[in-house]
Length: 331
Image (cartoon, rainbow, N blue to C red; front, side, top):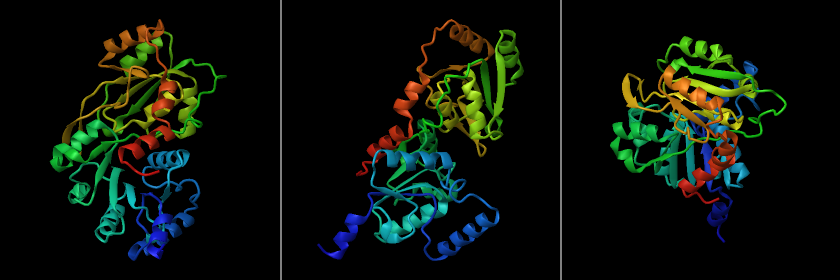
């Protein structure tokens, strides 16, 4: 066996990247970032353990470990790169991967889901011919990408990140007494909440309010622990990780149905909850629609099994397995 064959045997099947390899100028950029992090006293083993979108990266890395995949995460040397590359985030990272493929260092590039917002961003880099598959978080995002870059029609693959089912696990000793209203007004207009909170409170429900970006994971988990139901108001969600976290806590969700939103002044068809199913929740159009849903919920009309569904379909392990199968990656 020659030296080249020995090296190929040691290479992982897959590398997951959220930052470029420290080659050339990237080496000095990485050193500068480390200095800044240490100066600001960031926890290098915690807060920056997972790059890109931390929840997405964490899910894939931990999921791949759980299924015993032959992979590595952010290797530092070119010789340690897998033959296949998943670039989860970072335009600079993707540009470097494209160059490495042009040089024959890697064989396939899978790009996404957290690199661009629109497929035309950064001179349509996501549509570069060197990219074999574009990973999107849901079908409506794939459709939006293809609408602006038709050449992606045969390249988009939907994949949802999972959640840690041990962290997001309900405490059976806590009584569920509240309805939790979740809002995310930062990404589009939502209805006035007053009629909804007034209705719930007038029917004897204790109402909790929580707004995206204003809580820690522990705070959200604590509120979910005492919630019998979550009512969500979001203009659109590319995936809806907060919804998956609620399902893992065995909380069904009722979500305001909105199917158009503006992204960077461009109108798209969208979804506020791409993975909402009959097992884990319900869409409502307005206050009257919610009232009907609440009345049915009170009498046990819906047979929701949100945690059971989540464990089967959206745990870290289940989601990593789906991606490996969709991309035909050798474990």
